[in-house]
Length: 131
Image (cartoon, rainbow, N blue to C red; front, side, top):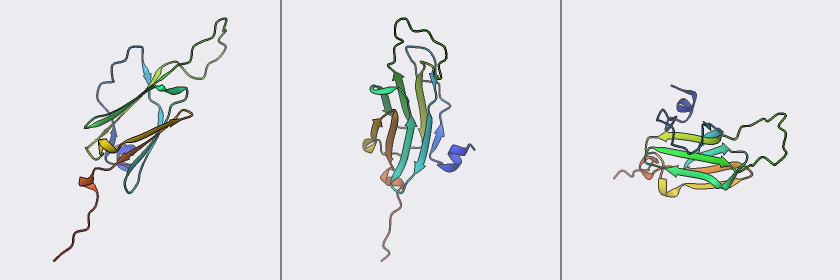
C-alpha cells in the first residue's frame, strides 16, 4: 500500500499506459491531495502552463491532467543552464467512483491548478431515522 493510498484510500497512482501525446515524454508534476468533508482538494503545480495549454479530463475511473508550456526560446539565445525541461506535464489519478464528475471545479492561477472534487452522494454519510 502506497503512502497516497494509505492517506486517501479512494485515489491511487495510475498503472495504466500513459496518454498518447504528440511530442515526447511527460513529467509528473508535484501535487497535493487532501480529503475534506464534502470531497477532495487537489493542488497541482504546473509552472509555465497557461489555460490554453491545460487539459483536464474526468472519466469514470480516472482523472487526467495534461499541461503544455508555451515558452519559446528567443533567437540568439545561448543556453548556459536550464532548471526545467520543455516536456509536458501529465498526472493520472485513478479513483473508485467516489467522485461526482458533474461537480468538479478547477481554477488555474499563476501555474497552480486547484481542483475541487466533490464526493458522490452514494458514499456520503447519511443520518437514518429509526421509527
